[in-house]
Length: 371
Image (cartoon, rainbow, N blue to C red; front, side, top):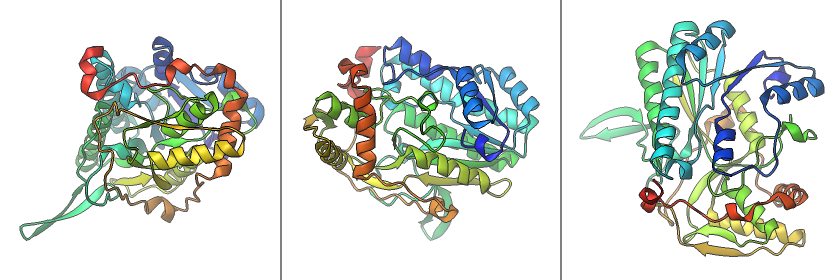
């Protein structure tokens, strides 16, 4: 929708993986949304712009190859991933699905582009989680190394904290191999956790919103905390709560993608940038949500739970985020006003909250018990 309203010809390809997993594992979003064909019709009725769509799995190379050959894209935005770290750690079936889906979709896309759209700009969604929590500053994708008197520029060392994050590292490595070998043009975006409800395109059109997940598997931390506050459940801070990450509003995800697409890297270049606007630790986010909730008469509390994940709960974290600012990103900050708007949206749908989806059900160190 963000590209369509700018006059671009857009095609969306989807296989409903997220919907199917949410249905299978009984993890519905807060609000049910129409399927893709109906959403495209709604968008056309409110905007006048048409979005083409195809339903299919891009793990099927012949299907994907046909789409790329027919549409001849100049830009491809690759979101076709199983995106949940807890899901990838749930058991062998979930791990295998994550591994096969995430790596195969990237591999197939690379080959479809090489065969039918070699000049296309691939924009792949990565994750800040690829870097892990190193005890040095996190650069934007690359690092200059001096070792025993010699210097080189290399991909920044990566150490994912889940199988999901590890598959994203493989994506980056695959793309870098094909960029340097075949001259593809790629932007790899290391995105932080996203929060929020509306974008410029979906405001006042509830059937066009993205899915608002709040469960322990697919919900991101700000969205989860907002729902927990409204539901009267103490906010589930894992461990000490010092885990620090870079966050961004859903509005800025769209703003950033448009800026990246409109400012292509050089042909044959792999550009890597970090996509977030602010850094917070989990306890700071919980405090912000509690304060915003209190302004609406909601008394929210915090509960420190045993951490189900294998991660540092207190650590150094400083990530560079310069390239998007250079492209012109105007950030939306996590203000009390933004959190109040989220809380009000959730309150409107409070009766739909399933409280059984709140507590963590997957433990990293006990993943085999779920296999």
